[in-house]
Length: 149
Image 1 (cartoon, rainbow, N blue to C red):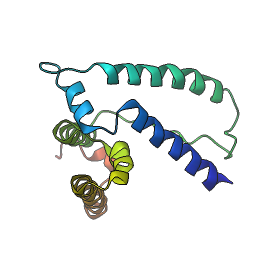
Image 2 (image 1 turned 30 degrees about the horizontal axis):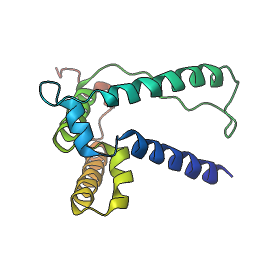
Image 3 (image 1 turned 120 degrees about the vertical axis):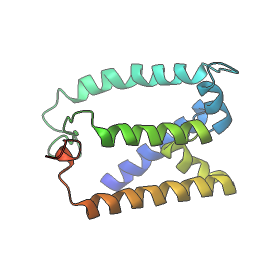
């Protein structure tokens, strides 16, 4: 049952990305162009998403456990470090240059554009490279930004 629920939720999310315009690179780039042809409509999409999600989280987190699991899976809090800053910078550059982030890029595969396939291929290569580098470094992530003595 859980895989079916995950697919349905993914489909709803994908449809939401399409309907809101988040899967349209031109609309995203206009949103990011605050000094030019700025389109504030995606800010409204983000505000609406927060307005819907915040009460949902508040209600769900009152439960002892989620409906489909025994415990909540929440990320551990971690400090802002070099890895986080570098990842955010790469994400921001990709979003700003292409107008796509991972979710809308996957949704956009359905239009069959060669540019989308190139972007998703590069995104997957980056994910694989990051995983390889993380494994090959074999360094404790919490110690990665501490100065060596």
